[in-house]
Length: 267
Image (cartoon, rainbow, N blue to C red):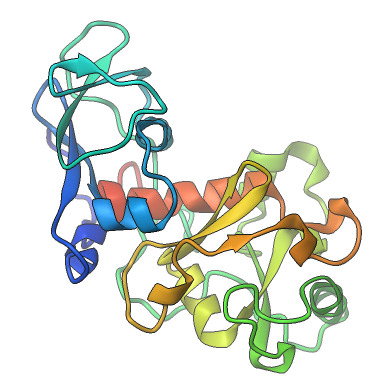
């Protein structure tokens, strides 16, 4: 399958192979590679069932379908094993699957640049009235870094999606996304972790009433956070101020496009 003049990214497997080279590869019936998923990432990230793989396919490609592994259709609760799975399109066609557009971070029509240091979110230490209110609200809710528990003075109050891209908020939330400084739209993260989150290397996956921390780009400095569970009681205040699940899932989708699919499309 040709993707034209697209950006390609180092797959999560390239960094996670430091832990283990075992992986699950997912191809469609045309032979095109859809996803490459390190088993250590899945196991340590508490998503080691095929339901997660199917969710990732839905996040990355247009066509619905099922998975064939070891000559059998897998169920969502079946444990993931090393090997190769074939995605069977529901429409029965064997054409290449159609990638969804992305990954989309700071730039609406430009693919993310691997390793770029430019921030995709606002730095809420800046002294505008809205930013100051946003930071105070996140410090009150989170108190310390959500991943490292570092003191709030070492943290950035950052937006889940780029503040410079209000159209993303409208796409995800609809017309309610008018004021972008609600604490539900942000996270309190240590400064360096904020930049990793910006680049799509770290994400939070809403799962069964919790958030699971996933490190897409393995690094010894951040590896200990992979699979960390954030319970709802981690957050102070009312439920409406907790991180918005839909925004987190949009960000998670972009991370999976970058590091599990490994290429941009439609940018």
